Length: 319
Image 1: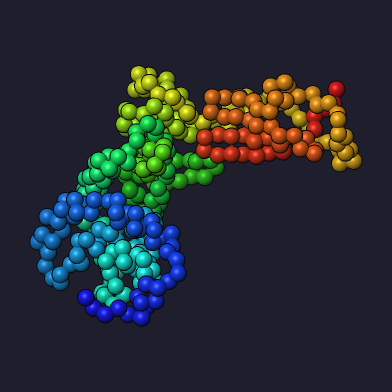
Image 2: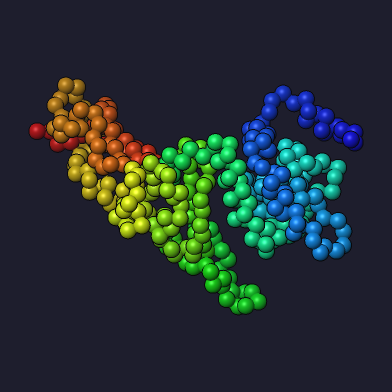
């Protein structure tokens, strides 16, 4: 073993361990590195000419860190030079010949060329299940848009045919959509699929559920899922958020803001529905409105499975 540098010696005696170090230590102990390396070893160095490639163990760990921290190829190269905890996770030292951005890019293309992504994902899922880290009592479904270049200044002179444009809110996006299913307790991804960006979220729901759930959570994009033929036989508790328009129509209480000159008088009677004056009103299966009396009126908390929105409700016309 070579001698420690001054920087490494100072790092060893630092006073506390950072959150990044703790997280990387958990990843190091959790993932089945030996199994993953065996699956890639046959194709990694086959038919290579020129200089000796970086060890597979190093490049696999660098690739995992790039995914965990959502880094670009240049960003990953800079992180290896700047962050000691990342170098130690990859088994590198600052005095070593560190992988550059081109090497990191080529390794990702190697995984894509041989379609190792799905194979590695399934291996990790089996390992986690064997460790008892998949409770499978509930799943959370969601989808995210991944942007793609819209320019046609390329060799073919056209956009990627597998990508599509879609409108989200008031903005247009071009790319693909990633659909994921996550364990509700541990937050581990157990299923995923990809489509063009214009595919509706609900069309991929059957591929995101493993069939052993007791509860399923989703945003408003999955409204009406329990009525579809593919899910009518599922004996699960559907926790799907309502659309904003449905929430507004469910709460028919009209209150007004008082004049600035008028001050609230203690002891006045409020003409509020009895269900609200009790303190809590359940307006839907997955949304709750909680009311709290304040000095100028009422404060309303709208509680949904994925968010909590607060608004101040002012005095109502007195009787």
